[in-house]
Amino acid sequence: MADHSIVHLEIPTEDPEASAAFYHDVFGWKIETNPVYKYVTFLSEGGTRGGFAGPSEPTYKAGEPLVYLSTDDIDATLATIEAHGGKTLLPKTDIPGVGTWAVFIDPNGNRLALFTRKAQ
Image 1 (cartoon, rainbow, N blue to C red):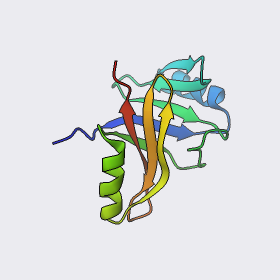
Image 2: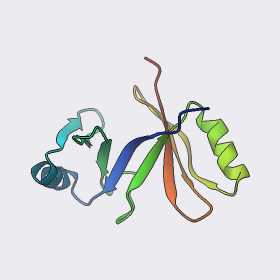
Image 3: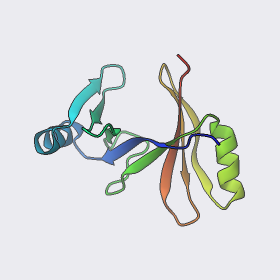
Image 4: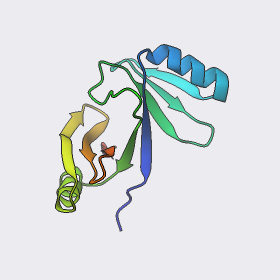
């Protein structure tokens, strides 16, 4: 069976730097900023990785964190999602040098994302 584990968690925020400082100071999360995308990321002590989505990010929706699930084939997974009552919100999109991603909504209205890391 394919691996569909949770690989990323995105927390919406009006101010990614301020949110990063909060989570670093309160929970000790390691914070980094991707210099190319200016995307602020975190690594929690337990190993969960994620980022802070500001209003300029296409996934930003205040009050709604976004969970990313791993998949080897985004197109096939989106087809399966749609065959079971889900809907694609953002089709497969390239993140140069990183991988590909897409966003879908499940039959209950929950937004989630798919992610495939670029082959090394």
